[in-house]
Amino acid sequence: MKTSIDGWGSGLLGVVIFSGSLPATRVAVADLSPLFLTSARALIAAALAAALLAVLRQARPGRRDLQSLAVVALGVVVGFPLLTALALQHITSARSIVFIGLLPLSTAIFAVLRGGERPKPLFWLFSGLGSATVVGFALLNGGASSPAGDLLMIAAIVLCGLGYAEGAALSRRLGGWQVISWALVLSAPPMAIVTLMTLPGSWQAIGWPAWAGLAYVSVFSMLVGFVFWYRGLARGGIASVGQLQLLQPFFGLALAGLLLGEPVAASMVAVTAVIVACVAFARRFA
Image: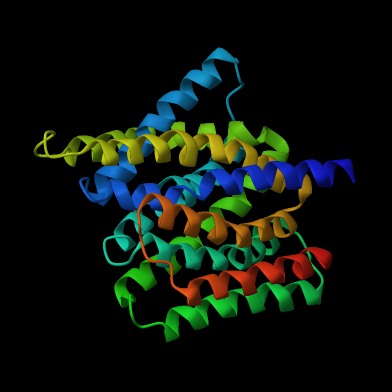
């Protein structure tokens, strides 16, 4: 019981930190290209992670861990940040945040495929209900929709769920912060090349909000949040704690409205209310 409570507490803190990712990305892509933002945030986080690993004298991962670390890097270091940055050129952060409601289902599916977990049938009913509500909203709300933006967000969710489940399973052996740190270090060389190739043509044209957005996603979204998130998934169960992501739209929509002044439609609030209601039932049968 203590392990489960600790896992949910760590997972909730990770969700709170991740809630600022999409609004920060939305601000950053106003002045920075998606490729540069993706590679730069990974490179900055990798430098911090490498320093942390060196100071704490962490042993290098074994060969059997490299494939899993590559999957983590593909899912959460490269795939999700790049695809969401591209999506946010077509849709608002408020709309993109609603798609986060699909993350628990994606994570749970990969928890079965990669983590060996077996939730009860009723878990899938309530997790699927929450996700179906999100998909229905995306299909029916045509006002601020963009087919390209919506498809990019769906692809991002799939890769992110894979990275979450793979990293959580590996965290049981390596530790939560070690997994994301080694994944960042592993991806640093190609990210450095991409950063150099996509440097902004004019630094003067980049405003301080874009730099602030880059700083947030580099330090908090790319590193600090994962320290708590992977710990929560490993200790509380991937499918179970993963349902906490259904709370992320609430935090994210509040940030999008308060900090960015984006319109938050009543339908968006209704959708988040329905999917958050599903988390209690999904948690009960996880």
